[in-house]
Image (tube, rainbow, N blue to C red; front, side, top):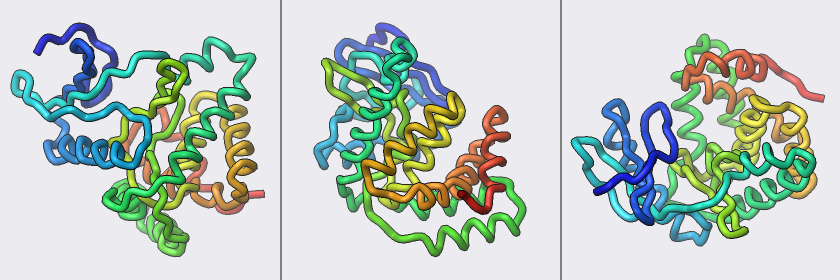
Length: 247
């Protein structure tokens, strides 16, 4: 397979263009089971009618596993927001609408969000008291079955021919949409806290969700994210983990 050009580079993978396909090549540190699961999850998401890059196959390239999928051309919503900051409210509105449409979907074959959060919190490095507190809150949270992306943010939305396409479904689960919203809020806070607050206000208004309900998920989602051990995020995550009450 000829790799035409590098499109993106992450900690565990590189994405190349190959003709009309995108080829995501994983390095040796990424578990084979996780690669297969990513392809499986994306294939399941295809079946429920969301616009995503369709998976073609899992192949071996020079001893490394890779997932090939349809190439989606266009700009990310993040790029568009940076190029046109005067219309940021319009783009956040669009992002909320895309996320609400996703949350209306059901995909019973996806992993459960609660199970993933439990595993991540147990591997967060927090002390046992804090883990117990967060896991107790999580255990009492309402059990929903909505499709949750797990990393929904403007960098994972490509506007292609005027239509939004959601990419990078490797964290997708079924569960409580407010946990998914809390994850998006934390991501936006890393870049611009005022945009994050605007996003949360718009989501809660459009969905009829109490802001306090979403905020209650922030310590849980922050602790789960802490398991990634990304130094530049630790300060913000610890801030949200330590918050007990919200206005």
